[in-house]
Image (cartoon, rainbow, N blue to C red; front, side, top):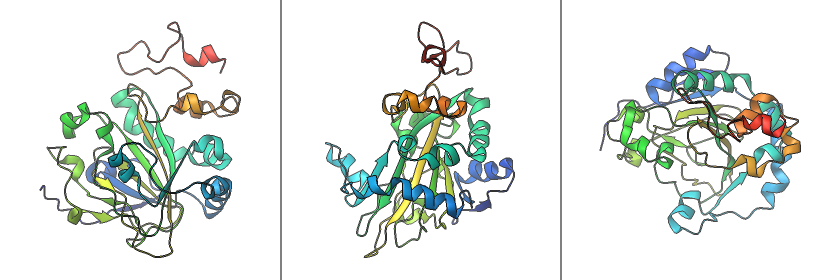
Length: 287
C-alpha cells in the first residue's frame, strides 16, 4: 500500500484565477471548484433530463459482470447529454472556466483535446461503493508511463444534489496522481469523500485514484454530472459523432462542435488525424 499524507480535498471558488485552481489540481490530483453552476442552471438541467432518467431502470447493462458491478446495481447512467439538455450544451459544457482549464491542461502538452465521455450518474440507496480505479486505465500505456506521462483525462464531476459521505460522494485519494506505480489503486481506507454542495464541481486527473462511494441512506439519491476531456490523439469512450444529430451540431458553438469530434485533431507534431481525404472533418461536413 502506498502512503499519502493528504487528508482533505481542497476547495477553491469558481471566481479564482485559473492558475490557482490548476496548482491544486496538479499537486493533489483533484480540486473542488465551489459554485461552478448556479441554482437556476441546476434546476433547468434537472428538469430537462428528468423524464428520460425516470424512464430508466437502475443497474449496469454491460454483459461483463465485473463491468456491470462497476456501473452499480442501483445506479442510473444517462448518456448523450448534448442531445437531451439545452442547458448542458449552452451553459455547462460551454462554460468559459471549463474551457480555460482544459486549454491550460492540454494545449501545451498535447496540442488538442476533445470530450471522451459525458453522463449523468445517479447513485441510489443501498448501492455499494465502486471499486477504486484511475480513469487513464482505459488507455493501458498510460498506466505504464505513471506520473511522468501526459495528462490522459481531466474529469469534471458536478454535484446536482448535495454530495455527502452517507449518500455516495465520490471518494478520492489525494496525491495518488504522484504515486510511482499506477497499478497500485490504494485501499478504501485511504480515500476521502468529495463532500460538495449542489453546483460545486470536482475536477480531477485521470491519474488520481477514485471511486463512487456507497450510498448507505434509505431514501437519498446522489445525482452528479460527469464529463471528461482527453488529448485528441486518444480514442474517446463515447462516439459522439455517431450519437448527436448533425442538424443539432450545426446549431452549436464552434468550440462545442470541436469538443464532440466534428473536426479533425492536430496533436503536436501531427499534420492532422481524424481526417477525410486529408481534409478537416469540419470542412467535409460543412461546419
